[in-house]
Image: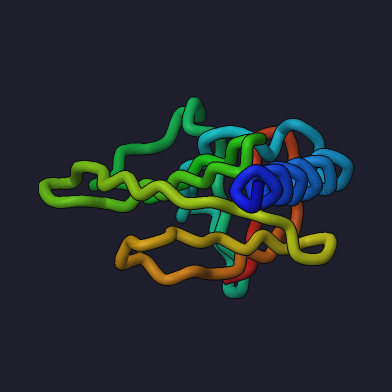
Length: 125
Protein backbone atom coordinates (compact mmCIF):
# COMPACT_ATOMS: atom_id res chain seq x y z
CA UNK A 1 0.00 0.00 0.00
CA UNK A 2 2.84 2.42 0.82
CA UNK A 3 4.49 1.88 -2.58
CA UNK A 4 1.20 2.57 -4.39
CA UNK A 5 0.72 5.83 -2.43
CA UNK A 6 4.31 6.91 -3.13
CA UNK A 7 3.91 6.22 -6.85
CA UNK A 8 0.72 8.29 -6.98
CA UNK A 9 2.47 11.11 -5.13
CA UNK A 10 5.39 11.08 -7.57
CA UNK A 11 3.08 11.09 -10.57
CA UNK A 12 1.03 13.95 -9.16
CA UNK A 13 4.16 16.01 -8.44
CA UNK A 14 5.48 15.47 -11.98
CA UNK A 15 2.15 16.40 -13.53
CA UNK A 16 2.01 19.53 -11.37
CA UNK A 17 5.41 20.68 -12.65
CA UNK A 18 4.46 19.89 -16.24
CA UNK A 19 1.22 21.85 -15.91
CA UNK A 20 3.05 24.83 -14.39
CA UNK A 21 5.70 24.76 -17.12
CA UNK A 22 3.04 24.42 -19.83
CA UNK A 23 1.07 27.36 -18.41
CA UNK A 24 4.18 29.54 -18.19
CA UNK A 25 6.08 28.58 -21.36
CA UNK A 26 3.74 26.53 -23.53
CA UNK A 27 4.61 23.28 -25.24
CA UNK A 28 7.66 24.82 -26.93
CA UNK A 29 9.75 24.16 -23.83
CA UNK A 30 9.43 20.41 -24.31
CA UNK A 31 12.05 19.59 -26.92
CA UNK A 32 15.74 18.94 -27.50
CA UNK A 33 17.75 22.15 -27.06
CA UNK A 34 21.33 22.67 -28.32
CA UNK A 35 23.74 25.35 -27.08
CA UNK A 36 24.09 28.24 -29.52
CA UNK A 37 27.16 29.75 -27.88
CA UNK A 38 27.48 32.29 -30.71
CA UNK A 39 24.37 33.99 -29.26
CA UNK A 40 25.49 34.00 -25.60
CA UNK A 41 25.76 37.29 -23.70
CA UNK A 42 27.64 38.13 -20.50
CA UNK A 43 25.02 36.73 -18.13
CA UNK A 44 23.02 34.42 -20.42
CA UNK A 45 23.37 31.21 -22.43
CA UNK A 46 21.26 30.65 -25.52
CA UNK A 47 19.89 27.33 -26.74
CA UNK A 48 18.10 26.61 -30.00
CA UNK A 49 16.06 23.60 -31.13
CA UNK A 50 18.30 20.72 -32.18
CA UNK A 51 16.87 21.06 -35.71
CA UNK A 52 18.37 24.56 -36.06
CA UNK A 53 21.09 24.96 -38.69
CA UNK A 54 24.18 25.75 -36.63
CA UNK A 55 27.53 26.89 -38.01
CA UNK A 56 30.30 24.28 -37.88
CA UNK A 57 31.51 23.47 -34.37
CA UNK A 58 33.68 20.91 -32.60
CA UNK A 59 30.74 19.72 -30.53
CA UNK A 60 27.80 21.28 -28.75
CA UNK A 61 26.20 20.55 -25.41
CA UNK A 62 22.46 20.45 -24.99
CA UNK A 63 19.54 18.97 -23.17
CA UNK A 64 16.04 17.67 -23.69
CA UNK A 65 13.08 18.57 -21.49
CA UNK A 66 10.18 16.12 -21.72
CA UNK A 67 6.61 16.55 -20.52
CA UNK A 68 6.83 13.41 -18.38
CA UNK A 69 9.47 15.01 -16.11
CA UNK A 70 12.46 13.48 -17.88
CA UNK A 71 15.55 15.62 -18.46
CA UNK A 72 18.34 14.36 -20.73
CA UNK A 73 21.71 16.10 -20.65
CA UNK A 74 23.84 15.88 -23.77
CA UNK A 75 27.48 16.68 -22.94
CA UNK A 76 30.42 16.83 -25.31
CA UNK A 77 32.15 13.47 -25.04
CA UNK A 78 35.39 11.98 -26.27
CA UNK A 79 36.30 12.64 -29.91
CA UNK A 80 33.54 15.28 -30.10
CA UNK A 81 30.93 12.61 -29.48
CA UNK A 82 27.98 13.01 -27.14
CA UNK A 83 27.57 11.68 -23.60
CA UNK A 84 23.91 11.27 -22.65
CA UNK A 85 22.87 11.46 -18.97
CA UNK A 86 19.27 10.86 -17.88
CA UNK A 87 17.70 12.86 -15.07
CA UNK A 88 14.48 14.51 -14.00
CA UNK A 89 13.20 18.09 -13.76
CA UNK A 90 10.59 19.92 -11.72
CA UNK A 91 9.48 23.52 -11.50
CA UNK A 92 10.57 25.84 -8.69
CA UNK A 93 8.71 29.11 -8.74
CA UNK A 94 7.78 30.63 -12.08
CA UNK A 95 11.11 30.62 -13.88
CA UNK A 96 13.37 27.87 -12.52
CA UNK A 97 13.80 24.19 -13.20
CA UNK A 98 15.45 21.94 -10.64
CA UNK A 99 17.43 19.24 -12.47
CA UNK A 100 18.55 16.05 -10.70
CA UNK A 101 20.39 12.99 -11.97
CA UNK A 102 19.85 10.36 -9.29
CA UNK A 103 22.89 8.14 -8.73
CA UNK A 104 24.96 9.62 -11.57
CA UNK A 105 28.10 11.65 -10.95
CA UNK A 106 26.44 14.76 -12.37
CA UNK A 107 25.44 17.12 -9.54
CA UNK A 108 21.92 18.60 -9.44
CA UNK A 109 21.50 22.18 -10.63
CA UNK A 110 18.97 24.97 -11.13
CA UNK A 111 18.18 26.40 -14.52
CA UNK A 112 16.73 29.92 -14.51
CA UNK A 113 14.79 30.65 -17.68
CA UNK A 114 15.11 34.24 -18.84
CA UNK A 115 13.00 33.91 -21.99
CA UNK A 116 11.55 31.40 -24.41
CA UNK A 117 10.85 32.40 -27.97
CA UNK A 118 9.85 30.10 -30.80
CA UNK A 119 13.41 29.17 -31.75
CA UNK A 120 15.45 30.37 -28.78
CA UNK A 121 15.65 29.50 -25.07
CA UNK A 122 17.71 31.90 -22.97
CA UNK A 123 18.87 30.89 -19.49
CA UNK A 124 20.98 32.57 -16.82
CA UNK A 125 24.65 31.50 -16.68
